[in-house]
Length: 425
Ligand SMILES: [Zn+2]
Image (cartoon, rainbow, N blue to C red; front, side):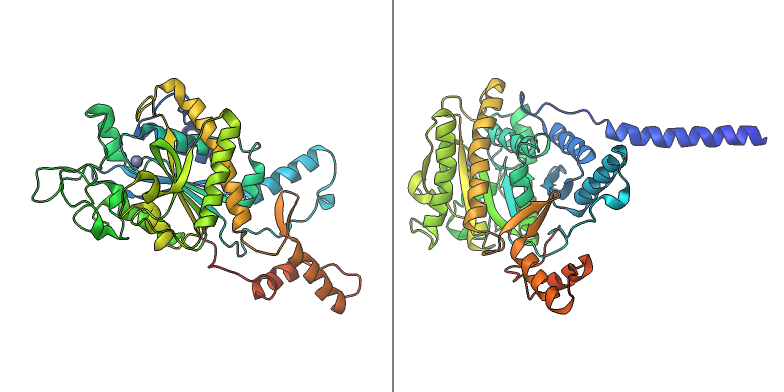
């Protein structure tokens, strides 16, 4: 082959690769605020956010019975990738402002690579197939925390979010194409003519007390975690258990915020804390548009015992300190309010959810007794800083602690008492 032709071929291949990369960045943005998205569109939206924001990651939790992917989005402002991106941007701006790089501040220690305690909020929607509004509200939370991240910066700098917008994709798709009122998943039951298990009765916490007739809408399944969807949720919950601060399960349409227990009318020891959290959400929504949510324990408000639910499992087995169920409003409109209601319900719910996240952080701070501050966009723990400065002053006169000294002192554990396990970024 002549040399000139070789060069041309090489050039063409190069062009194709860069175009493919460019195309990846151009994933179309599905409209989450004005329509109910199908499963494919939800995944496309998550992909769009991953390509656009350095603080977003997508996790595939598993596959449903009909081989649909169950995905979770992780939104973590303090992750290393994002902090590096901020640092690069700061350096770039410094160059543009004609200041030299040496004058820009050195990277400061962030909490990302260090113990972060319980700092994660976990939200799940779409467990019950026909409750479309729960999927839309979960997507609205994702929208607020990503596309409107500057409005929610105070929350993002303190908390990490994991959101599963659609926990039962097979059932959800079935409500679009066959039966709008379908509730369960779509896995056939062995030796039965019925199909589907209620995923919110399939968790291993007082599972045995749940409904055992396969024809019922609330069928608990043949055994705990018999369903691929509940196994996928269990696996991520167990993986994240040391970092989980607040778990929120979205349902519709009873207009209530409820706390454990569901299996019994007895109240858990920390019920007052849970009620305080629920009231924070209720009051925020009330002051936003006057809507009144009821607050109480699941068994008391629903006036029946609900066994094997995810929220009881998370609270009773995974030991997450704060766990709630939010029954969204659409009482007058049913499980699938018209598309025009998605945005108002989403915004109203976000007011309540955001307030509950803030309150959760205040009720269970990751490092109790240590005051936090933000410097150059990164979290500092003041008590750690000052103790280190005192420690260094005794050995080195007029010399501030170096970055490495600060890091090793934090790692030694003398200064920060790690309450829970290591971070699971
Ligand atoms: Zn439900």
